[in-house]
Length: 565
Image (tube, helix red, strand yellow):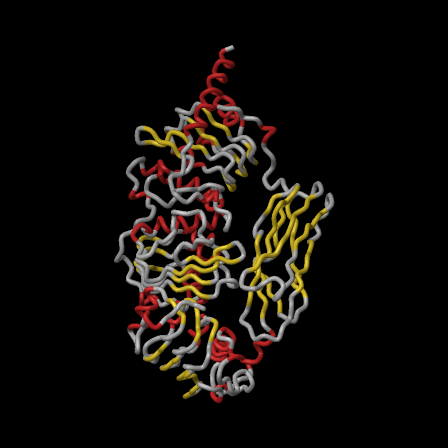
């Protein structure tokens, strides 16, 4: 009779606690964001918080709206439902680089140079694979890269120059247990251990965790009297082991970890939680010794039948996170694997989405379903038709995704990048007089500014000697000058203009070029470049780009630019 009264009281108390769960205060609700995955949204918010976003030079949209792409947050570019480019250089970022940056797995460009970011470059950056990633710049900050793997990654993917870093000259605004004052350091470290051992970066909700120095505001954490008293992390995609450091949270009265993917033994350290009155770890993959089982039964609804063996489920995922196909290769063949339990029929949907490649002109949009019969673990494939053309193009990418798994769980990777390499690129491989990279820059300018309609396009893309093309001047094996003013250029200035890094003069004034001048022009260094004129077009530019133009001749003049027709 006494036990019935206890459980009735527990039930009413637990139901009442539902209304006391922490509520996120950030204006941006990542759970409501539909343009990009929740984990990418959370990575952006974490970057904002860890680098003192409130004091950025330009923070338009950040942590204010739920549309980081369509009403874009400053510096964020998206494609195919993912964040693909992040331009926050010269923007007064200070503090640490959040480990969640590694969740932006579809980044193509990451530019954070010329800020005050400090501390270690987190090892999670190596999650950003190439492809799709091809350019990273973290120079001119206060960063260190003591991990050899991180340093190699930086060198492989961008202009990493350790001499541009001044370690120790900034104030870290990010997380540190040493800076936590609202709970004991041992409890803070126990929370960190729980996060790390249960793959916190992959939780459904990890708001605040390892980002702020106020752990009592972290998702699922409640405190009273300067100690952690309640931990609510049920239905939150925790995986990995049950951390033994839970025993350091000595003032816990409620622990709810049910409906997750925790695996292995429940540690005996839970029995040291002397103030505990309710614990629920059901619906995981856990086992327990007899003394621990008795303790769990005494303090909550322990039910061994709700626990399944570790790994006791089918998992479906791509065989690779990146595929490559030549433009004239016909079809991209994508492989999906089934691992784990082979009992029962399982299925998963697949689909393609645009990134820099466009369905209908570069590839054929594809959707479908793959099905495995009971006991079948043979790899399945689907194909995507690649469309060949005669255009000279840079590499282009599209995204393939898995979803709606039935009878199985989605593993990783469940998204992959397919890179289409251009078979016309062989053109630049045959040029003489300049480098292949500079050739690509010239070709991009021709294509982006409608070269077929120029007043004079003599020899452009017709000969393999670009130094004979109209307006091109060369010296010592490089393009040194480009004179295309008054020549009816239209369209946009391509980012590839940065490839003309040996040019000292570029003249594009008095044309019909439209849109924003790409930030990549700032990669054209001075010297050798001392003169670049883009006035009398229909161009706009960010403040850093305008400042860059004003450092060379003849400078930027807003009054000469008119609206795009």
